[in-house]
Length: 371
Image (cartoon, rainbow, N blue to C red; front, side, top):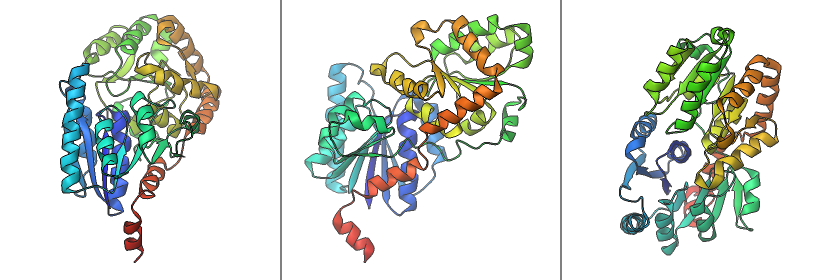
């Protein structure tokens, strides 16, 4: 079987694509991964590619420079259509899978023109603009949350969940030694998605100034800042004598979650899926852009009691600190919220999504496999 996966370059799109690619390759499928190559995400994409070493997987970076305005985006779409047509003429895939972002559109439409089976994967609770438009042209939509199916107007759908890396959710805390932190002290994990969050970074710098002397002695922070703010945030913690381990980027997220008692984060689909897999209570400050998708994700968490949502426009340092104080001081509350957070987890999501792709393979392939 020959499968083409198309993904944006951010972790929320690329991680599920890579997890599925790995499983398809293990089943003997010839797998290509096309992904957007973006300069500011280069450290992330490089690290993720190094994690997947399999000769059966072919990686093809897509140059999307110049696609920031409408004319540039249209030119890039035309170029991707041309690339797709050439690829399909030489080696037509049996199934094409889009993982969201505008780069999926020209590739899937070119596939449909050649009557190639197509599937979309929607990571968020609310459909993205591209996926909402493309959903009418594909054979099936795979969704991460059951609530999303109501937004598909009857389009064929399957609930697969959001694939995360296999190591996420390990309950042991022994690997926390990796950060030089005490596994017995209350630990706050701060992260802002693939690129970090300048708003959250600035807020934590202000919070470091406001915490009490006793809290400075008891709390510890593991903070993933993104490249732009790493030094500034590290200096803020040092100035206020807070025990903190700060890095711009981290691949060992399994160890970070294992260490964390509370997580302060954005509300991207990948983050929500990881929190659910680990059962970690969270304070969520959704990114206000991206058509409000993160707010919809966060409200799902809040509705089941797994986290507290504070919109960015209302997220003053004193308000966020008040919520953190409550959670870090109450182990029983954290345990209850963590248990509720697990209710959002879909076990074996990568396997479910892989099976949804295999279900679209041509009949001739299935007969050949049986024979």
